[in-house]
Image 1 (cartoon, rainbow, N blue to C red):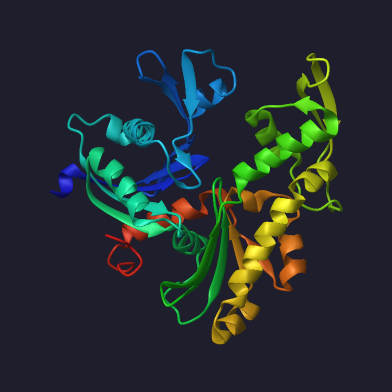
Image 2 (cartoon, rainbow, N blue to C red):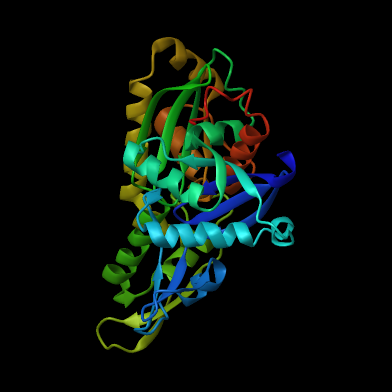
Length: 339
């Protein structure tokens, strides 16, 4: 049967979906779908649909099938997964569509019903053997932590929809905290700030761009990014207008949300058994996910927790890398995979 089975690892993210096949990231696309309202057919997915976001007319709508790390729109998510899998170059060329052995990662605060939704989506796209893995666990494996050891490690994975905080030891999650403050909320914070401070109305895509180009969580950076010009609609006159924004302003906009992430980390630390706390004191905290790329976040968390903070080398791909490693060694990671 090995001939007709292909292995793929999927990181179904709120903001981006990544797929690994044959040890390579073959798909890295925004989790967004454009649908024709009249026929209910999918017109575009990924980058192409992302370009349409905020620019559609009444016959087209753009949908983000995942909200807060879980499937919100079942139909759209299934079509998206299906198309992304079909776009994998090596599978694309096969005459028969092979049956798939998959590992999909899920947030740690997910319910049974949401878990079933992910599983059913996978089975409908020809998934014969489907395993699920918790996101912080996948992130830890992807960062290169040996999760089998009787030693505590703390991983904070700041994604698009949720921030997952977990203390991991003996290939299990000892205590975890999942909060819905992450990339999407940061984007919303920037939109609100531009509205209240500059009377400028901007869309999600522009806010996302600000976050990537000048996003920061502290005002005194060693090498600050250059100021950025932002265009949008003036709320007072209705005319298009441009303002210049600096990283210090973004830091102000994100402050409240970052405080909530800090509190969640402190909360998780306060629930950690003392022996594991001793380990974390020596090993520090590992950051993964797109949110880890915010300038100054490591410095700020380090000041709050008095612990060393390490950012994964490619934080955006840490989770999918870990999922891929778990897929290759399913026997070794039996205990962390949910069948």
